[in-house]
Every structure is written in C-alpha cells, then in structure tokens.
Image (cartoon, rainbow, N blue to C red; front, side, top):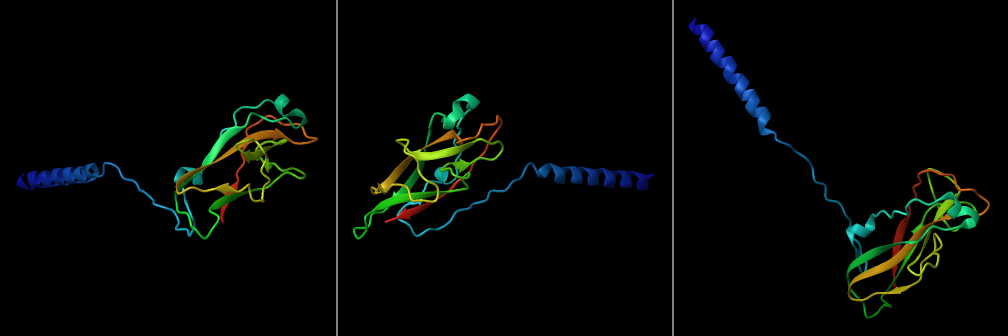
Length: 174
C-alpha cells in the first residue's frame, strides 16, 4: 500500500512538472532585422523602399480608347542627405519593369487590356528604363513626388478582374 501511494505521488508530481514545463512557454516569435549599407548621398526611408499604391476600382469604359484612371500620388522619401560641394547634388530615378509591346506602360498581371503609367507629380509620364527628370537635393530630408494611373492599351479592350504590377527603382546621384 505504501508503494502504491509513493507511485501515485511520483506520477502526480511528474504530471504537474510536465504541465508546468508546458505552461512556461507562453508564446514565442522571431524578429528579423534586414537592410543594406549603401555609398550614396541619401538613405531611402524604409517606408519608401517597399510600398503599395492603390489605384482603386476602374471601369472598363474609363479605360476604353486608351483612357486613364485618376492619378494617385506616391513618393519616395530620402533621409539624412549630405550635400557635396564638388557635385551637382541632384538625384534622378529609373523605374524598371516589363512593358506591353508598343507601350510606355508597366505591364499588369491578373487581367489584360491595360497597364500602369508612372509619372511626375505633374502627371508627365516617365518612361520605363530611362532616368527621370533631375531633382535638386537639399541637406537633410527630401521627398520625391510621383504619380501612377491605370491606362487602357491601344487597340485592346480591358478585361474586368484584379490586377497587380510591380516596378523596381534605382537612384542615380550626381
């Protein structure tokens, strides 16, 4: 009978120990820190290096005959810019991506008949793969203003559906 009680006490205490060990893990996770060190006049704000621009819901009729949606503003923020008296202290950007044949628009994935236009804040279209207009830098923080829109392709009919497009950009300092 004593052996039975001792065995019961050992079994009970092992169960409590196991439950206590499981209760000690009350959540876990991982935090990754990424980035890069660059030799440039400015740092790119982390919110600007990867961003999403919502062009909204655009009707097929609006895209007919190379029609365009309303332009949506977006920007690229530069931080901690340091001017160099031996340089022009300007920046230009090149946007890259696939373009539908015969178009200056960024190709879309998911549906057809339209492409994304990228432009200056004024709306003047920027051609993919070519440097944008030159912008002067000031010491400290700078904001480069751009716009984007959806535009129907020449000779095509826009097909309803969700779309996605992506462009990479590179900075060129002078």
